[in-house]
Every structure is written in C-alpha cells, then in structure tokens.
Amino acid sequence: MVDQRAYNWLMARDVEKWTLLYDGGARYGTMTTNASESFNGVLKRARGLPIQELVSTTYYHCIALFLKRGEDALRWENDAVSRFVPKVMTILGNREAATRNLCRPVQINRTEFSCYDDKNIANRVLFGEDQCSCSCHSMVLYHIPCAHMIASLATTRCSHEPLVSDFYTICSYKNTYSGSFHGIPDITW
Ligand SMILES: [Zn+2]
Image 1 (tube, rainbow, N blue to C red):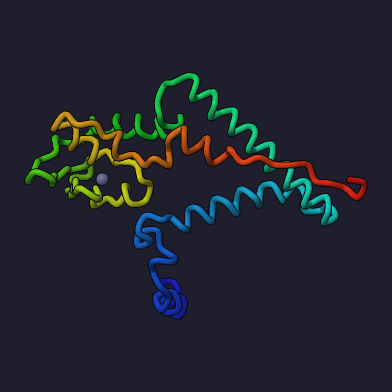
Image 2 (tube, rainbow, N blue to C red):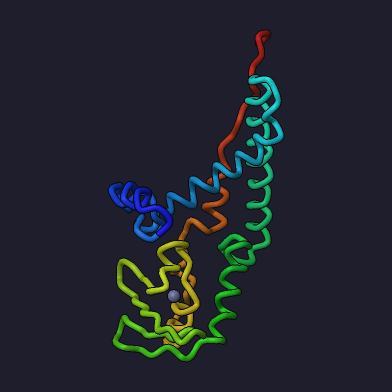
C-alpha cells in the first residue's frame, strides 16, 4: 500500500524467506533480527575502539553471556520447578489465564475444535498426529500453544505442555550455552 514497486520487488522473492507467516515455523526473521539487535547493543559500546579491542570486547562479552546463562540453566535445573525455562512458563501462565476470557470451545470432531475469542472471532484448532495448529497462527510463529489450543485441550482433560517445543526446555537452553571458550593467545604464547 505504501509503495507498489517495493511490493512488486518483495512479491517476486520467495515469501518463505522473508515472512514469518510462510516460513514454515523456522522464524528466520525473529531469529536473525533478535541476534543482530543483541550484537548491535554490544557493539554500540565498543564501536569507537580500535579493531583489535573491538573484536576482543565482543569475544569476552560473549563469554560472559555464555557463563551467566549456563549458570542460570543449572540453577533452574536444580530448582526443578518445570522442564521449561522461566520465561516460557510465564508465557504459558498468561495464556492459561487468558482461557478464562474465552467461551468453552466446541468440539467439531475428534481432532478439530472451534474456539471463539473475546472479539467473537472463531479460531479453528486442529490436533493432527504430526502437527497441531490454530488459525490465529500463534503456534506456527512461537511453537507454544495459544489460549485457544489450551482451552480446547482442557475440555478433553489433556495437557497442553507436550505441544510446547523442546527448544524451550531447560535442557535445550543448557545445551545452547554449553560451548567452551579459550583465552586469545598473544604473541608470547
Ligand atoms: Zn489460537
């Protein structure tokens, strides 16, 4: 709507590569944008430094981040509150709370539900053997069940936790930050 030429240029590209909705759940946009913004935040402080200092500052910042997050993962593991990281538990808690504002979902058949939200929009919830989805697309985007899916499963007394991606487990988080670093040798090493 803003620029027809930009629209034509984008639509000539493979939509799977640049839209969250059609990337099949890979979330390229979110992953690359978040990572680059995070590093931009680090580089902002180091930008004025000479190149060698800039590289070592970035490197040691990465090490500090890996150490802190590795320790966080160990602490969560010892606390044994949940198999998911705290941030995901908060998201799930908010979605569970949001189910209270929904009408009771209507079961259409063994694997399909219709769930009206607070704006009176019907969301189509499907529980397939290989893939579960909701027409609100939240599941595809975030790999965490939406309130419609949670409410639908609750009517059959089934847990929604198996639908949360394993990427959000404390175990995955720990593995992400399990890599080890080494000191940068100088000319005397
Ligand atoms: Zn939904």
